[in-house]
Length: 281
Image (cartoon, rainbow, N blue to C red):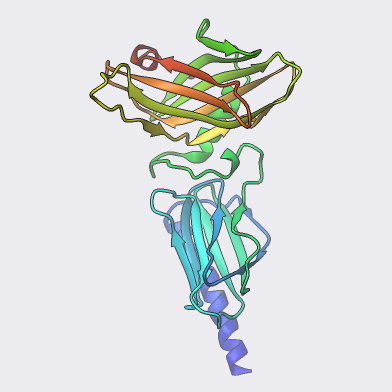
């Protein structure tokens, strides 16, 4: 009986600690989600992918290992340190003010290795958010949603082939974030399934004796379905990216690759268009 009372007191204490820490960090709770049951293994870690960056995480069982992946502020790796892990809980607070609870148990063979906790379709398809700590992720998401319905501000920046086209329709800037508005159009009778749609920086030209290195540009947030374009339809996408410029001898590349197909498109953008990004009103 004493053990049960002690455990209850400890749980209450930890919950109060979570709320206290959140209050100290000036994060207001906007939602408390129902506990999620999760069975984890010892030799295989389960990745918890949140739609926003992690503010804090709390757990009491020393047999549970919780690790935030370096450089990915919205991903936690969870696994058991040994097979004696008893049922316990994990509490995670994210930067948008949401509180997540997990009921953790042990399993020798975990069936779930990646759990995407995004509750809306535009949660970057489970990709890690590489955003600086100073960026307001909720504001970025809201701005990107608004820009998705805005009329094109840029014309004649388009690549096409095999009845597929990709058009850059706008570049906007607000504080430390740039927003790229992109339109994908499928004029064929075949579905277009995307294998990759990526941004990277590369030298304009290189000699045969020198190598050219690509620098990947990872979006902070994506609005729109970048995975599929139905026949005779158009998709409007917005990519939020941490502010950057490029040297005159380099270009920003946007590459669209078809899954199990050859209808690939490649767009190049110079630094002049980046520095002339429109302001958001």
